[in-house]
Length: 185
Image 1: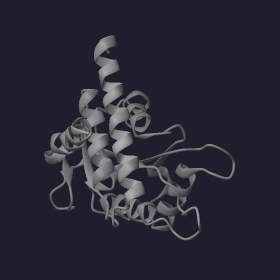
Image 2: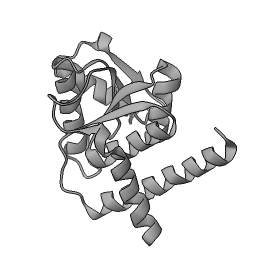
Image 3: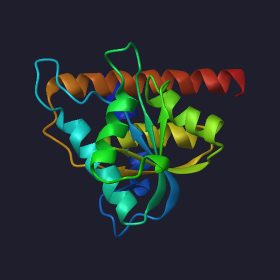
């Protein structure tokens, strides 16, 4: 149990100085990466994690804090496509499509961060999601030797299901880090 608490808090602490809440404080990066989530909840209705990430990305774009937006997420079948949904919403907010790139293979946070580095050759970029998610993405970026910062989209109350999912996701990331160290990657 102690291991879980230390790993959870450690990831938060290590990302603290690279996570921003306000437009005025965040430095400019050429690319902003919106981490994927579904637009709709399983029972119907809008997913506010999605809405607030789109709001945050468009705000960064229109305030000159990023030039391009990469929407990275799951694209598991014809009826479920996170990048397509995110791009469509950003265009509705006035972001021209030529400034939006879709990453259809960002199946999880690790792949999203890694793919921005490998496909777009970026070592500096801004992650756009909720704070708890940004903390994990920044930690992954740090482990890869990248200069990643996060912009915290508005959050919603943290439900037990989300907390458990985040704990498991952080454990998964720590396992990947140990494997990287062992392999010498």
